[in-house]
Image (cartoon, rainbow, N blue to C red; front, side, top):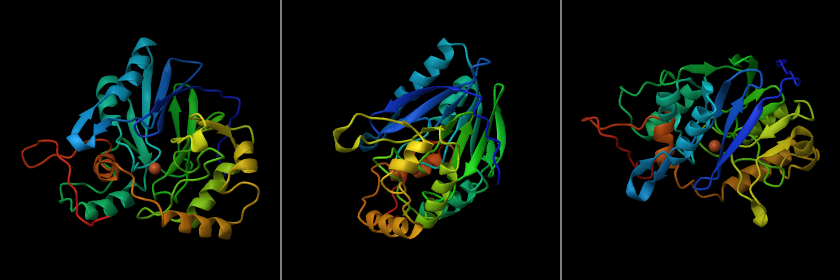
Length: 293
Ligand SMILES: [Fe+2]
């Protein structure tokens, strides 16, 4: 696949760090128009209290309203297991289409079973407005964006590229943090290695924007790097590490990782494009399957 890279397009990227989940949400604005997109929004949850709020999404909404922007897209790089998406909440206030990778159907099939969802839970991706395939293009104002299919962390992961900016989701972390786990159902360390190579074949000066950062060894939170920097310094895949090295390391490491704190609510909400499931009376409710994950 040759991707329609155009480094002359330089989107304005604003980052919004969510302290509770170490997620970075982005507003990506077309410099030649008033159009923008949101990548990976966050809905706040106090899981212990069963309380959902929208403080983080409200910051993005306020920003877009204050600047008088039109929101074209609300993009999910994948079905996140560590935070809830605020996509429907944002869409209600600002419009825009919710887009995700078409392999969402695989994720819905897997977790539809885990959460024993009934037949009313559609496993065809129809909760989303757009399902992307590898190399699909879409517009943010006058800018052309395109997708790269990057499975491994999950089967539905996609990197979204707009001009000289790529939003890598959980394909890569900052060079000193390496890569995301590949042990969720449908994940695969070999696939993740191959997907990372696709990203590293983008131009050296492509700006890369992370979905997460945990500030290892006490460094401040960072979310932006470049292809050249990842190729040279990434602790898991940089400096010419082999596919075999990566699979061995990743598999051993993943076996020791605990489940993300918010995986149970996150999957139920995110596989529905950010909608909270409801009980038979229509009240929002979440399930906890015992020994199901
Ligand atoms: Fe993730």
